[in-house]
Amino acid sequence: MLDKLRMRWVDTGLWEKLEQKKTVVTEPRGGGKGDFDELLQTYYDAIKYCEGRDGALLIAVCRGKVSEGLDFTDDNARAVVTIGIPFPNIKDLQQRRQCCFQRGPWGL
Image (tube, rainbow, N blue to C red):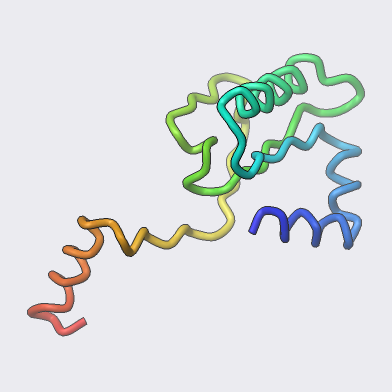
């Protein structure tokens, strides 16, 4: 989904406009911990040493690596925009029990 969004923004010219204002960093699909650490360092450096740009923009997906226990303090996250709400994992035992419970007496 993130790749499709990026391609759409490239096609419409929005991506170029974003890059003129901020350093744009996107969460990699897959990859190892070293790749992710390098991505975060790039993001933090872009914020700390913003040369001609106004900080950085980190684009990531819900339930991705960025959502796993990271703490964006001070200038590292001045705003958060969430687009779309992730669907629950239908294979999760707790989620299945909740669905069965709701379907039971209420017939939902």
